[in-house]
Every structure is written in C-alpha cells, then in structure tokens.
Image (tube, rainbow, N blue to C red; front, top):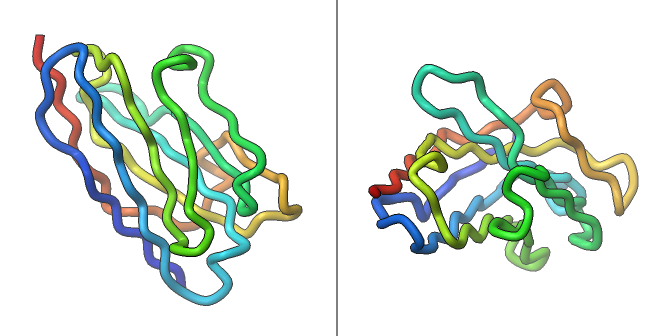
Length: 127
C-alpha cells in the first residue's frame, strides 16, 4: 500500500508563490511516477504536472507552463509543485497521485493512469 501526504497549501495573494510537497511512503515508492492535479469549485479535476520516478522527465500542462514546475527528491520520496506568479484562477484543491513507472523516464497525464491519491491541499489565491 502506498500513502501520499500533501502539504504546503494555504492562502496567498495574487503574484505570490507556494510550494506544495507530496511525501510518499510504502513499498517500492521510489519507482513510482507522480502527478499533480487540481480541482476548482464546480469544475472537474484537471492535470497540472507529472514527473517520472527518476526525476529526469517532467511535464507541465501548457496552460501553466512557465509558472509551475514539478520536481522530486528521490532520496526523500517526495515530489514538489513549485507555483509562482499565482493567479486567482489557480484557486483549487491540489492533489498528488502516484503509480508504478514503467520506465525510469515514464510519466503519466491522465487521472485514470494513477492508482494512488493524496487527500488534497487547498490553495487559495486572493486578488
């Protein structure tokens, strides 16, 4: 069983930054690819970014590219979502997810690709 615990959410003013963390624990998590998704009120959950288990390959949705980056500390089995120049429309519950990576450079973009999810952390951006 894999457990994911997010942290780092909160209230921030527009233009500010936050870094979310997702600590993974469980068997073989070091070979799990990880993803970030978000869900705003009244909207469906959407993809934000993903990273391979090696950390060598990442992908961020084009709508937020340049403001958000995904990284991980393989020694700590922790993934990060660095969010800069935040906008009110970034307000959402942010979730991390994980699944076994097929290859060291594999990452995944769809909700259905992931079998493990964190509890979510609220990010609120005020104008």
